[in-house]
Length: 247
Image 1: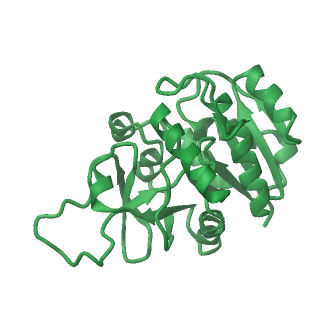
Image 2: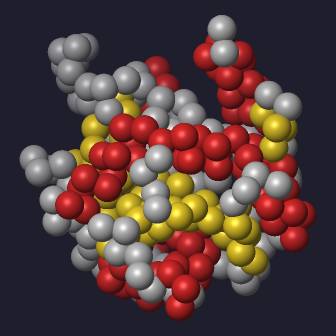
């Protein structure tokens, strides 16, 4: 299958202004995300979907195309779908949305998301084990799955609720990572559905996909992961983590 990678990059973040252009270890965040996805080597083509000429200028210096989109999209997935619908991309079977604030996205997350499409899910994504002490953080989105590894619900709240003590070695909490691999028809159905009340309440676009009956297969990773960069504190944590990785 041919895979189109699209990184949505909106300039107007409220919690971290000019987020795609914020520097991480001396380079714009969007550039770090581009390099990460390119290093994984799992997409046949990679583009950035943005509402900003400033972001497009920075992206063009990285050797990846930036495509300008309408400014008023409800979510990054809607922005990705606008790009994927262009005639030039009609030959791609799967569209991968890698959120523009995931500079440390593991290769296993991307590979596992694509594998869920091969297994017949409409959408593939990934999750990492999450310690209870971090589960209360609403910026770390939690996911619960069924026996087949399909998502039942995503929430910023702590799910599942633990009424009684359980085996601490058992991973109850799973942090959703910012990636979606979508079959073309599933992506069109997702963005063609009006936002649901649950999506509006949680501000989670994937709840719209569940609401309209799409299946979301979740690959579970073996190791914890950093959350996406949403705030200045997240950016500082990412900077520290970057330097640890560089030794």
